Picture (cartoon, rainbow, N blue to C red):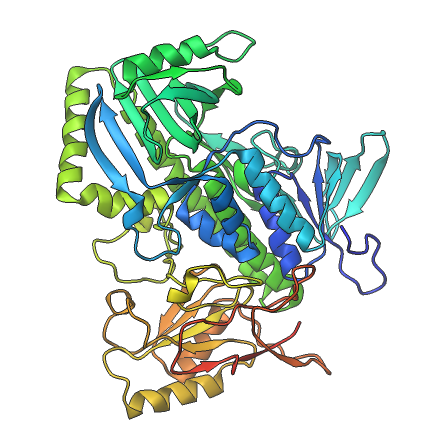
Length: 570
C-alpha cells in the first residue's frame, strides 16, 4: 500500500488482508477509509476474474457498498432486478417484489458480473490510496504477540510480514484458514449445478430473477441486460473436464422455463458444487476469516458474495475502531458471534431453497407448490421473503441458537436489528437523505421522543447530550417520518453501530446511556493532547479519508450535536 511497509518505534503494523476478491477488496477499502494501514495480497497476477461468478448484489450490500462510494457505479453498470419469480412446471407460483421495499435507498437488486463488481471496488480502493500486491501465502506463525505471514512472490522471493491482524478473504480453499488450523464444518450432500453466462434470444424477463422448478430439477435465470443471462441448472452428475456446452443449457431451458429462448455461444460455463459448510470459528486470536473462507453454501438466492460483504463491513469497523482506540479490544469477540449465526442461517435457508427445487415425488411437489401459492396470495411471501432475499432481516440479537435470530411478526426494532440509517466515508449515499445519517466509524446515539416532543423531552435530550463523550455523535430523530412503527411511543435512546445495527436501546437518561455505550464497546479514553475537534461533513478527500468522518444529514433535524456536531479527530 501507500502506507509505510516498515514501521518505526511505536508505529503500528499493517492489517494484512489475504485475497482480493470482492470481500477482501471491501475489507481493505473500509480499513483504509478509516485511516488504518493495510496490505492486500492476492495470489493471482491476472487481476480480477475474467468471468462472472457472483452475479447479484442485493439491497443490503448496496447500502454497505455505498459507504465507500461503490454502489452508484455498480447500479450504472449493472441491470436492475425488481422481483424474484417462482414457477413450477412452467406455471407461476408467486413472486417477491423487491421494488416494494420501503426502508432503503435501493429497493432493487443489481445483476452485474463479478469481474465488474471487483473492478468498481478496486477503483475505490485506489481512491483511498490502496493497491494489490501479488503473492501467495505459504506460512503463518501465530505463536508470537502478532501473526507473521510468509508471502512468496511470483519471482520466488519470500517476505515475512508481521501484521497487527491477518484476515483470510481467500476463498473456499483458504490458505489462511488451513494455516490457522480452523476446520470447515458442515453436513448434507453436495448438489451439482451447471452455471453459464451468455446470450439468450427470446422473451425472457429482463428485470426478474426467475426460479423454475420441475420434476427433473431446477433452473435459475438472472438477466445481465442486453440479452445476456446467467443460467444455473441442477444436474445429476458431471464428469467432463470441459464446462457444460450450450446444448445442455438449451435442453433444460426448453424443459423448465415458462418462456422460450435460444441459447447462444456461452461466454463461460462451469460446474458449481453447492456445499453447506461453516468454519468452526471465524476468529482465532489475531486471525480472522471472511467470505467463502468462512462459509460456503448453495447458490440459491445468490447470497454468497452478499454475505461476505456483510462480513467485511462488520469486521472492518470493529478492527479500525480498536486500532484507532475508539473501541475496546473486546469488541472483536463479537465478530464471530455476530457473523457465525448469520452464516449458519444463510446456510439453512439456501439449503432449504435448493432442496425445494429438487423435489421429485408427487406429494412433495404438490405441497411445495400449494405452500408458495398460499404464501403469495396472503402476502406472507412478500412480508418475509423480501427482507430475507435483501438480507435486511440479518440480526445480531443476543442468541443461543438459530431460533433466536428469527424475525418477529411485528416491525418493532430489537437490539441487534438493522435500523434504516446510513453512513458514508465521503459523499452521502444518493437517496439516503430520507433517513438519518450515522457515523461510519463510531457508535452514534439516536434519541427518540416517542409520542410527545414536549418540555420534558427537551430537558432529557439536553442532559443526555451533555453526558456522553464528545466523540459520540448525538442525533434527535423524533421528526423523521417512518420511525414510529419501529420505535413505538415511549422515549428511547439508541446506540447504533457504524453498520446500522442497534447496539442498545435504553431510557434517555445519562447514566443508562453512558452504561450502554460502554457495554457496546465504545472507549471512554480522553483525547490525546493537541487533538482537535472537527465538524463532521461529507467533504473528506477520497484519497485518504480520516478515521471517524461521517456524512452530514441532508434532512432537517430538530437537534444534532455534530455539524453543529463535533468529534475527536483520531
